Image 1 (cartoon, rainbow, N blue to C red):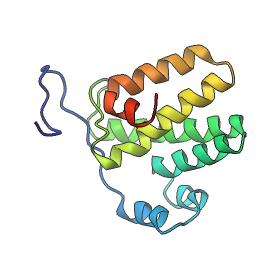
Image 2: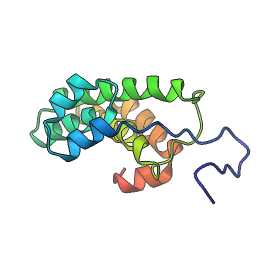
Image 3: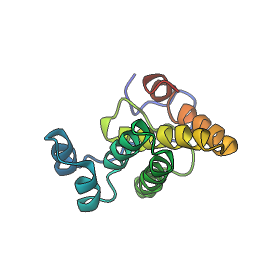
Image 4: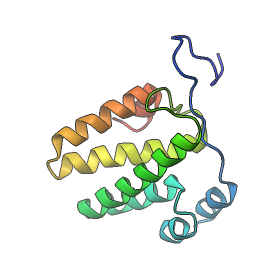
Amino acid sequence: MSLHDNLLGGPPPTLLPDNDEAAGALAAGTDPGEVAARWPGYSAAWADLADQAFAADRVVESYAYARVGYHRGLDLLRRNGWGGHGEVPWAHVPNRGFLRCLHALARAAEAIGETDEAERCQQFLHDSDPAAAAALGA
């Protein structure tokens, strides 16, 4: 089975495009804030910022970074054919920034007492790809 298969007859999985420059900058150790400033639509940079802030107990900052990355990711998903539902496979590496932001948003929302939002985000992550939820410990 490939990433393009959909055994349930729903919409095809959404596969976001690569951003080799932004990914390369992060891989080379460029500060994620610099990457996000240069490529604001690159959710992986926002996910890194959210993770760093959460690890430093700056939960509201983590929430804000995750929300920006989530919304920029939604914009990119829509531009690439996603219609509000359907698989966003974890196995497709360019999707991981969005999925990580979704997880980070759920985590931060839970930490600040936004239980309904945390639950919606966790469900959205699981619906996007259970493998993502498992990989991220959600």
